[in-house]
Length: 267
Image (cartoon, rainbow, N blue to C red):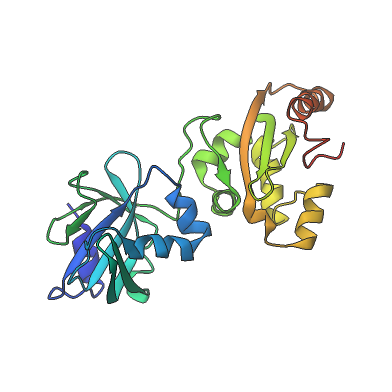
């Protein structure tokens, strides 16, 4: 058995300092999205606590909780200062210790040994379950149980994750893009040779617009606007469907959701 302690000590974590391992899990918000797309907000979340859980702690080893009792390593942080603002308000100044842990960050999955306690001293050994090739937040499980942020889609396409590519390449369908900043929706259909994978790859290659007129206008005004897009599947289409039949189904969803009148479709 390989433990997270072994990996960290082998990369220079001192054994004579006080270290806690921390598993962030919060049903009130999407910590994956916060960490990936709003890093400063995530760091503020990590640094502020209602109890003095990091008193006399030199470093924290930080994880984001995944399904069940698993957790993903996201870095080692040195605590440089502690401030108490009220009985239930503690703030800790932290700086990330980057270099020696960069090859482990966002890749190492551990089994959390005590799911009840989200912060524990490092002496409690945690088994390494898997070292993944990248920040692969969502494994493909079903066509209708996911919503991908654009950053997640970019990672999946760029790294050619096999579980996603295999199923999406052979799948045709009607899909939805949600602009989370404005609430406006875009409905599209994928009926080409490489199915949804091929169509969504085009969005990645064009920084988010996929050569759609209204999406392109948004990105011409703000090239980073694609970071607000979320991708999901509305309907699967038969493999033998013609382009005209697919467009007819696409138009049905445009009418249902009002995306021509109030959204991001212009035809």
